[in-house]
Length: 176
Image (cartoon, rainbow, N blue to C red; front, side, top):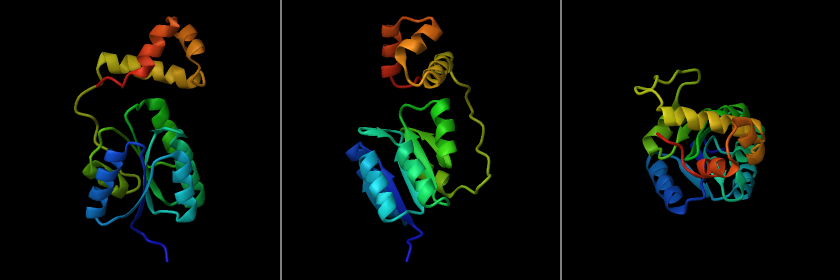
């Protein structure tokens, strides 16, 4: 019998993963934890969950690989991608691979629950505050970086920016 409240939680930050697992269990989910792409894919194949929360940037690779595996095994599973390194390009990629939503960290359990349980086709509320100029610049750099296949030298050339400056920008978290 398939557990319809099964949730796969793939996150490499152990304290965050365990805290979120407890919070989701308190909301009625049966949580399975994984801390890497490899472990997440293995757990998804062993027992395809109805729901999943996957971190985008994991120690051993890209969380979108887990999303793709989940969507292949169980297309109706509802997957939310969370990340501290969010940008428009990766949000679009996450949806293309089968995620239903994309949340920036820190996302609390209520935000994740709302995303997992949202009615298909429902529209989120528009943001109350527009993006800052620093955030718009950061988004543009991230988009060009993705278009260049994450090649720092090519991205720097296209943006007419010194490579070391670009590396410093890419190493930081996104501005608010």
